[in-house]
Image (cartoon, rainbow, N blue to C red):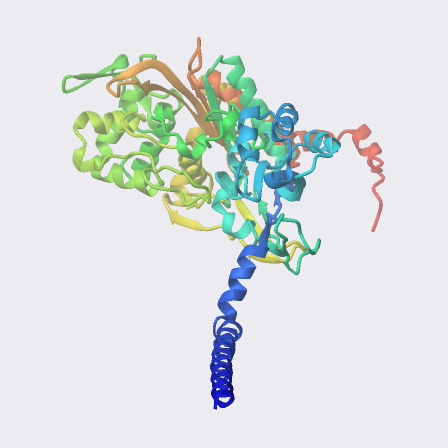
Length: 590
């Protein structure tokens, strides 16, 4: 009996152990099923998060070219320095040695090296010298990743037009910003398995997606024309001891901008931190009262309306003219002047009387038709529209002062476009800077086509106005220093007081300007030169006109546009003909 009882207890215990074992086995099976089937995807993701890292491959921006195919902005491959803090034993010594090479304080580097993160950037985009010196240290825990850096090989040339990029090669200003989506391309990445110490298990990664290069841009800017504009502008600013200046060269037939220069210059390789506000493209961001360069707008409007003829006479009150309680003055007193002479001698009183004849509403409408008070549509960020008060707000004195460029604000680009409309037989063209967008092989993605905005003046009125503007650069005119040897130049001088700093009244500082086109009867170039705060003599005809002349002369010769008189002289010169294989009197037959 006792044996049977003991045996029964043993079997009972075995059954209990067996049941417990089966339960444990079932639990293990359920757990295994949960881990391997139900939670498999979740666990795989957690594992990848801990052991797999995605390292971004910098995108390659497209190249910026000038109109002739010269590279203006390119990419360079440079080293960026990172650290894996857990692998660096002597962090203090490492920070000390890197500090002198990188130009970063020891304390800042030490803070980065003591980070709990497995990866920290120490310095992005090292100079070749810095990279070489760090590599020579052969320190553990430091590494390099090759990144793309934007480089502008011509330094300051067209710096404000091109703009600049950020540390991750994103466009921040200028063309770089305006066309960032097209230029920037797409970043790639490498998936890398890492162990507990952060070391890569597979040097090449387990998956790689290459970065896609962005499109290239071909600009309308011509490097040589840009150089001429910048050189002569800087010389004019220096000679006038001025605060700064700007110049713009445009093809009036198409609206293509051939040069856009700003002084002081800006080097995009340095970025805005080291350059102050010189990165601003003042040709589109800064406004000024145009002064006398606005007079052709009122005269052209009155001609178009049939209210005046070039020979009509206006009495200019011997230099002093009352409108209500206000007095308008001319720099030089005049009596009777024809409409043409009002332009030639730049009479404020004459322009005022023509504006009164035209009337507020009609004058306002023409100002708008010429493109003032609105954006031009050029492909650059930061353009401002200037200010043209609605005619309903004008008093009689406003009608008069606006006729000679006071009481409104404009940009240099707007003025250049308006004069180009006169040069282009009365048709206003949209200014543009990008000739085409193309892929790396040169295949055209998008090509710009010149766009007419509207007809502002009839061809007849435009021809009359051209003839009147030519007299400005002839004997007795205010713009004689703008003369280009061998060519007729049509243009206008301007000297305008700057608004006082407190916003009321005018200061003693001036804007001096000259804008015109050449050759006058078949214009190929429109050029505006604006000098900000010249010292001493401040007249546009003295300060800005000579720069116009020098720019125009060099650009015309560069474009192989020669005076007809020079051609006639040289073609008849026996020596000239002989050097070109043309024996005088013995031209080849057939």
